Image 1 (cartoon, helix red, strand yellow):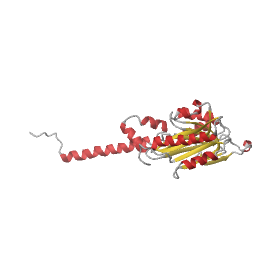
Image 2: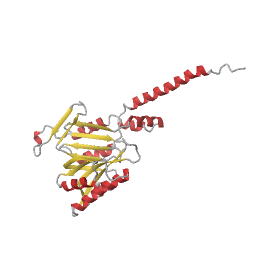
Image 3: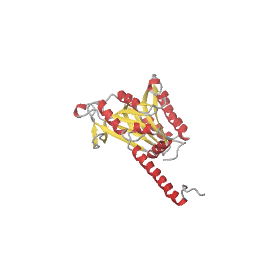
Image 4: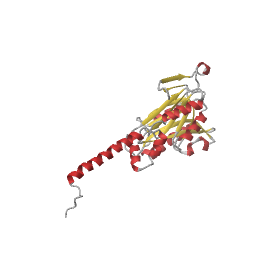
Length: 282
């Protein structure tokens, strides 16, 4: 006798389509929910399951920059404000750059960032003469400049702009030019260039990076450094930056950090962007 409870193919097909459609809708809904999470919660969500991880990878599949400015008079308040803003949406920081006004202690800003972001995220904090960007709270465009020796003429001297970047397909790190106090600058410049080439080669298989953001010590002549870099790198390497700054940094390679090189002082730092040989082109 035939089993009367067995479903016919014609009745099973609509149910299968219904289940498939529900699964697809759930996937879209999951991505929608995850895309609204702040960065820290997003990072935790990516570890829940393979499905959630795949959804998170889909959301962060393209390069992304998150930036904010604050002119709050209290440095810690301004710093917390911009950090909360740039981390208010999904992002995995591959690097962080903070540009601050004269009212900030750059070492304090670096320590704050080290405690907040991933241990291997390269960070540069520099004191600058002006900043611009979108306000962390009002989203209005803001700009301020500080005049040498006339800080009192500017109503706010604690401005900060923070930028974090996610660059899939690239490897990023800080390479310093660490000079021994009694060593000739020329030999240390050669080592600086070689360090950049070695790092780039280990990441991409070639010796010239895609781009370099460089910040130089304002008390050191940066011209020979830039000339050497320009000669050593390919025409495709983009080099930008500030040659008259004051800065602190944290490299993902502990041996490059000043704390472990007390006999050296940094004349310049380069944030190096090298192609990741293990990832598809972006």
